[in-house]
Image (cartoon, rainbow, N blue to C red; front, side):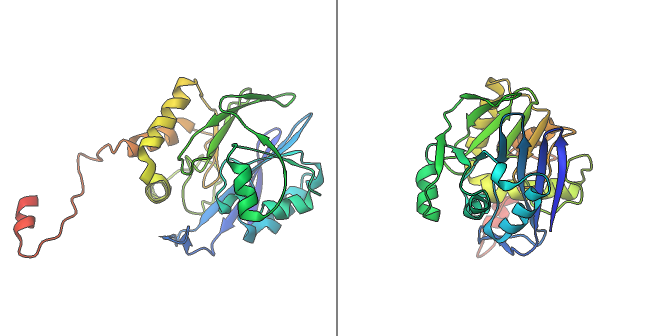
Length: 271
């Protein structure tokens, strides 16, 4: 199942619902499910697909694209992160596209594409902080390493102030509402679980990369991650949630202490 909606006059989000995967990344149990978001920009001079999907859902992605444009008319595919839940459908898309699109991604991604999928593609290296003119819009490239692989990037549309954030600022679950116009505590818990399991090992890099966005004066009106809700109402909230959790700020002045004891001595010490 998928949903196709507009988040801007020229930008669609294609959200794929994954209720089949029991263990995300083969490790994390997710009875709540997960979504995969791809974004389609239909510009005056260029049409761009931001990220593909897991191969299990590549047919759905192509079906959704065909509702608004022939896949052959997509000029470029931006890959923010090479993990297969966002790239294993790349070959299927390129076949529908007649292999005409150029892949835009981190310099490390080309070797990964060849190693993972045994395909040759047209490729453009995206340098950190370069700006790409695409007609009525400009895209700023921001390398954000270890969110949560070394090649992860974000892209920022300067005029529209839309930040395509990759895995960062995402969350588990299959929310009924695609955007944060409806937000409840259940979804906040799904974000926290996602951060703890997927990106939590790299907490220092969450802080470093948020600080980098701050230094670059990136003030998005929309944050568009590849999992979970798109932040159109209050994009600052998701950034501050990530920052707070990465800094391990205590909640209600409480901490969790995990201990083991044979005879009760450690328990007495903890208490």
